[in-house]
Amino acid sequence: MGKISYMKLRGSQNLRLRLLLSTLSSTPILIEDIRADATWPGLRPQEVSFLRLLEKVCDDCVVEINETGTKLKYRPGIVMGGKHLIHDCGVNRAIGYFITPLIVLGLFGKKPLSIRLKGITNDPKDPSVDTFRSTTLPILKQFGVPSEGLDLKIESRGVAPNGGGEVILSVPIVQDSLRAVSWTDVGLVKRIRGVSFSTRVSAQFENTMIHAARGILNPLLADVHIFTDHKAGAQAGKSPGYGISLVAETTSGCFISADTVVSYARQEEDAEIGDEDSIELTPPADVGEQIASALLGEIEQGGVVDSTHQALLFLLCALCPQDVSKVKVGKLSPYAIETLRHIRDFLGVKFLMKPEPSSGTVLLKCVGSGLKNMSRKLS
Image (spheres, one colour):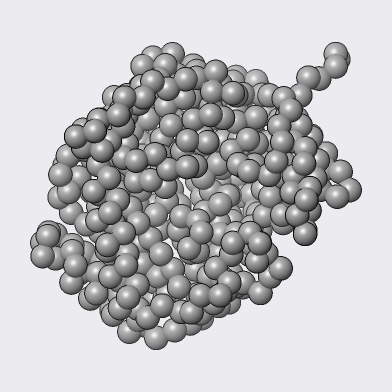
């Protein structure tokens, strides 16, 4: 076997994205200076946990980390998928941190993926598991991902600081490749759905949040239904908390979401990372008003997806066959911009951007990389 050439990268930013694109494009990477000057240098626990997760779903991938954790060598293997896998995500980041890249990887596996993830289900920093169910999975169906076998089941909920939640994620494989899309019609909002939850606090908190959210949304739209999901006992996890997730469905089949959660802060040394360490618990009425306003803000942006799903949308477009994909989004988020740069570096796909000043939206076109599910063929 000849000498392996590594793509050299620096810094800790976008580590998940780099590892995901490295695996999909079969490009070995070498990342140096990972928080080399920080008080706590090297990889964070959630990043190491994500590497262990990659080792579980991939065969023959090689991970090398130096003693200080500031240098990482990663050689991707074959995405295997498989059933009855279990991974403890820890309590540093929510399960949403792991699900986003895992869904995309699972599509290009040798076998369908079914994995039980343990940890925090709802957290302010990452998309909640409710948002994945209501918004992320329908987005995948736009790209030709089969509905059968695509599911996220919430077994129990868990919030910071101690977690205790469990979900089962099922991802089917794409038989050959994804389907290119032309998705520019946003349509008008026809209904709003949502789910509120509470764990180890009074169930009345949910009713207060729903009442406050409906107070803002109902004057604009009659078809608003927000369901309650009060958990008790083992299903309530290990910490008290409450939150709400809303999704607006449009006449053209777009799903725009917003979610939030209130819980006690983590007891950790991560102050520099920006954990929500010093916030007071927001009253439920304020939570309901804030999330309804946040949803209206996302709808106002005018894109076919909300700002948290822009990066996933661009990634799916880049993984399509060598055909033109066309999508419309609102103001680009910083993470979406970084994603576009990494897609260019790893997959060689460039997006043509055309701003539309009248609506404040951006029209993006690209020719897909033509990635096929090679794992399935390597029998």
